Amino acid sequence: MVVGGGLAGMEAATVCAQRGHTVTLYEKTGELGGQWNIACRQEHKQLFAAVTRRLRQEMDDAGVTVVLDTEVTTALVEKHHPDTVIIATGATPANLPVRGANRKNVVQANDVIRGAAPAGDRVVVIGGRHVGMEVAIALARQGKDVSLITRRKVGRDVRKATRLALLDMLMEQKVRLYPYFEVVEIRDGGVMAVNEGTLFFLKADTVVLGVGATPEKRLMNMLRPVVAKLHAIGDCVEPKDALAAISQGAEVGRIV
Image 1 (cartoon, rainbow, N blue to C red):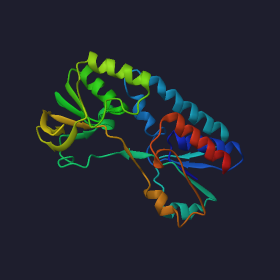
Image 2: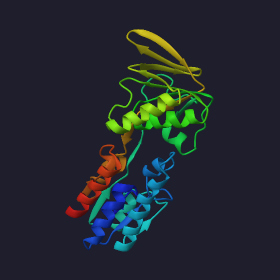
Image 3: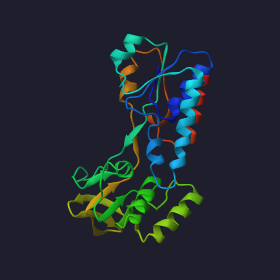
Image 4: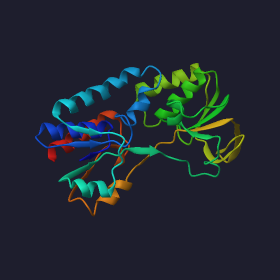
């Protein structure tokens, strides 16, 4: 049993089936691809969907049974009694542990990218890594007045060539950059932040969070007493890029 239809889960299911195992993959939503689907919705990344299509075709060719719209529970696992369970439940967008982070004017970058959360005319994006930079560029191209704030340098943990390209686009779109600013509070009208001991207020109609992801480990912890052979892969262990997720899925598939 493979739980989770993202890139890591799909690859693990394929390799297991190719090695002769009977494999069923469960995905709680109605589509495969997981977080990769959000990347596919971004500008100039529509071709990324080919990765999901290829992995789905490989699963079909290997004889993997795919069950969509089904959330795996302890009861479901006990009912089917699989020899091995591979957990690939991914990660959820992280929140910001500051006062006001749960206000109505605060939305997640992933929700903005997939069109589930509208943004006002004046936006502050919190988070200076890949997702934060890309959502700031996208909003600025829509004509929004955008500021990007991050507690470290802009482009941290982004590959050099990509970081330079994104920085160039941020400057081209006139996004205001605030590196080394620590957010202390989010208010209805904007963001309070500190830099070198000085308090600043950045006005915003909408505050967009792009501050990383939190591994989804709830099911893994629930199944430990129930399943003899349990493996966890992908973002539910630690958020990774697509190549690392697929590689880990293939590695686990080979050792099962």
